[in-house]
Length: 320
Image 1 (tube, rainbow, N blue to C red):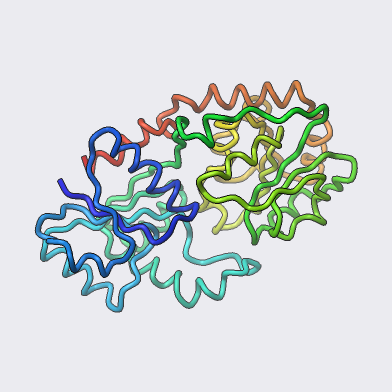
Image 2 (image 1 turned 45 degrees about the horizontal axis):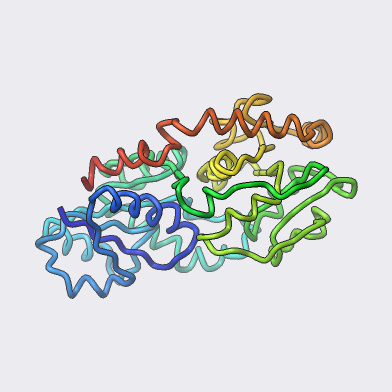
């Protein structure tokens, strides 16, 4: 079986959704032909290709004609999509999405034969766009043997360190917390615009997708606020996975997707109001943080939706 994988960049999405899982499958003997541009398909005998795997979208002039071309050669289009195609109003990329990415994502969904997604809620939205596609819940999972995940010894600290490691565009989500962090030790990533909100004691420069896990060495408790809206409900619970694989406790908003996996008070803390956020932040100490982190790790390490090899079993139904 020949599987062609289109990777349009070494970003975080491609790292988690295709590079990490498919590289692991390569180690187990599954072959992939990687391309960076759809133009490279012209140099491939498509009659020998079984699957074309793409991330989020294909950008072509005519999606229907592209689909007909694949079908003439017997090529199945597998779309991996982890995002809703309409961004929240405050997101700085909203204009770009509305003009370019969003339409391409929707058109690609409509022509896909198989869709992999790490969000059950997003799966329902995509089913409305393409009822004929086979849509499979395939969660994000981490390869714990990779150096950035395998070497997760925390730096020493006598105080609880609260970390926010979200990307740009989450100011409205952060407002869910509503806490003055003046008396807490906080850690974050520079250039995201959140310094004044969290009053970071320590800031590190943004990392690449291949070394960003090292940021968690400075964090005892990961803060994961999320406003309740359709775009956010379509997100994956990757922050929970990252916390588990880095020995980090998590305090998150009591909404999808986090409320579907975190057991409140046992594997993390869920907050639905600013008062609950304040209570959680004020009560957590080193001992409780370690307990929550350990429970989360034990809960997910062999879970069928979080263990990489088990998650890859779902992919193998189509590409093995």
